[in-house]
Each structure stands twice: as structure tokens, then as C-alpha cells.
Amino acid sequence: MKKIIGIALLASLVALSGLQMGEAKAGKVRTISGAGATFPYPVYAKWAATYYRLTGIKLNYQSIGSGGGIKQIRAKTVDFGASDAPVKPENLERWGLIQFPMIMGGVVPVVNLPGVKPGQLKISNKTLVDIYLGKIRKWNDPAITSENPGLSLPSRNITVVHRADGSGTTWIFTNFLSKISKDWREKVGNAKAVAWPTGIGGKGNEGVASYVKRIRGSIGYVEYAYALQNRLTYIKLKNRAGAYVEPSIETFQAAAANADWKNAKGFYVVLTDQPGEDSWPITGASFILMHKIQERPEVAKTVLTFFDWCYKNGQEMAKKLDYVPLPLKVVELVEEAWKKEIRDKSGNPVWP
Image (cartoon, rainbow, N blue to C red; front, side, top):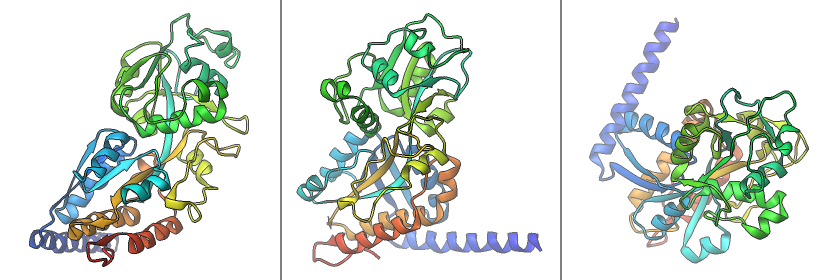
């Protein structure tokens, strides 16, 4: 019986693939383009590869950082932009854009300390801030050793690694640091690019992960999937409730549990430093940006059809890469916004 079901399922997928391939070939739109955040790149790549096999429609996505994504969508050189830093409603209005969340995940501090296993090192909020301010320079500093009794830490200099490009991951990270530290807020601030007090810069999550992997004694911050894929040592971080927690899909979900998407204008929601004993404190959403008035509505509809497929068929793929899919109620809010706000030059809705 299972074999019959399997054959039937395969046949239906083949039929679907053939139908959609035919539609893709018959239509004008075979490729869609996007640029921006490196935070969601692993899951976007997985979704795109699967969707291409089913439909023949290809996604060209440039993982160049949120700042670059915003610039490219404003310049209309791509069909959509992607940013981990939500754009403020007043800027959306000024630029004629719509913003909606696509996926959620966590930004994770990672270290290269031989002999230290993932989740073994504990760091408090204050200690993390002081490391990135350059105040704590050695791994055996009392501020770190006092939090980690029994863990042997070397008398090695700390090499701070940060992003060199305009980055939504940096925006999420510095948003968290600004919330927990007046010192950080006043001296450095919260932005996609800041004047770092210390350290070296890597381009993209990929660049930061590469530096941390190579440099002993380093600490950096990356999206969780990059920590796992590069087998980096993530830390336990002290959250708002005072509990040390590990990054995981469960702790990301805990942080996102109280997000009020319904009443957030322009879906502007920030998930850092959320309450709850199980909440990962540097959780964030990644957003898609599109123009409200579409000069090529057939392309916009192809893009939205892809995102609709991702929402409804990509959840398990997202979870396997340790991202948090959006709840169905949020997806419904997003697609209702598509109907209301994305239109062609004549004012006709592009979706559905």
C-alpha cells in the first residue's frame, strides 16, 4: 500500500512539475531576481532549488547584505529586496515600498576556542557588550571566568569579528546591544553599519564565519544556520529573564511568541530582548521589500507566487535549517496586504 501511495505521489509531483514547466515555458517570466540579506540565504537557496525543479522558474538571489538589498530594490534593479532590519513605515511610504516578513531565526555569537564545545561557554549581556566595546581583551578575564567555573579558558587575546558591509544581521545584533547597554547605545548605536570600537570586518555572514573558523581566540556573530553549517562553537547567552539559553528553533519560537504582527504598521516588528525564560535574546525576522506600483505586474505575480509556495510548502525545509516559519495567521495577514497594496500602473491588484 505504501508503495502504491509513493508511486501516486511521485506521479502527481511529476504531473505538477510538467504542468508548471509548461506554464513557465509558455509565459514570459522564467527568472526572478532578488538581492539583500545574507541571514536567510541558506533557506532561500533551498527553496529556490526545489521550486526550480518543480516549475522551471529560476531565482537569482544576490546575498550581498541588507543595505545592498534596500539600495537595489529602491533603484529597481531587482524584483525584490531582502532585509533583516525592518524598514520604518515612514520610509516605506516615502520610497513606495511594501514590506512583509518571510522567515524568522536567530543571530548567534560564535567563538573559536580549542577545547570548548558548542553551548559550553556562558556569557552575560554585559560581558558581551564589554567584549565588543574592547573593554574585555583576554579570554581569562575575571568577567568571563566567573561565569564559567570549571571551564579552562586560555590567556589568549580576544579577536572581535564583525560585519564589514551594511547588514541586517548587524542591525539585529546592535539593536540587542543598544537595548541592554546605555554605554553601547550612546557610543556606538543601532544601525546596519556602525563605527566598531574594535575588531576586524568580514563581508556577509559567510565572511564572519570564515574569519571565526580560521582565527583562534576569535568571537563573531552569525545567523544560526551559518554556525551549524560551519561547525562553529556557539555560546549560551543570558536573556532578559536572567536565564542562560542556547540558540535553537525552540528558543527562537519562544522569543517570537508574543510578536504583534496584526497591529504593526508596515509589519515593523523587532524581536530582540523579548521576555520569557526560554527566549533567545537575539531573535529576528527577515523581510521582503517590493514596490507597491509594479511596472511589470506579470513579474511581480511570479515573485508572489514563489513566496506563496514558500509559505505553504517550505516550512519543513526551513525547520531543517533551523529557521522559524511564520505562523499561518501571519501568512494570511501578509497575503491580504499583497491584495490591498501591490498594484499595476492602472491600479489593478497584482495578487492573486
